Image (cartoon, rainbow, N blue to C red; front, side):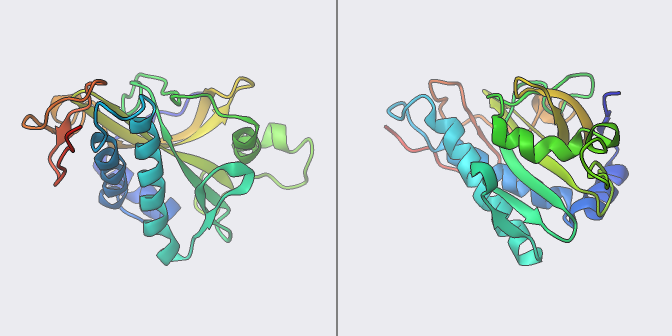
Length: 219
């Protein structure tokens, strides 16, 4: 059964604190760092650069946030992430589609995940799967459970949305289902996502600015 997106502010606060020991505002700041790097691109950058820079800067922000809290930077299977060994939780960043942050939607990564992500996400599949090859279950999305999460960031034109989710990966690397979804920036926020600033010119991919201190470079 597909997990519902948790949007209630109190529930969001409690879940983020119990699972990760951080606040919604701290994770949104990580999202901002990714978006700031994205809008720094100009018309002369390669078309793939906005997404790459968003992913890279958000990953750095994720590590800047979590490593001082006792997590460690991890690159297993070439997946840049943060890992809490005692809590058995891993978090990585992905750019995602317009289903992000929408309760009735089914978000997907911008690009399907490879074998490394499938291995990392195997613990999310559920006890009925994992118990076939191991004595203990690694499927718990509660505090202390073993699970693999993605901080999902969607940015298109004036819309910025984000959530953190625990996916079940399909054979093709897509998000087949979810063990949990927690809202950060949703369709119910201003302008269908994060409120934007209108005084920054759009890029060729219609990436506008937003209300943080970001200055777009000219080509």
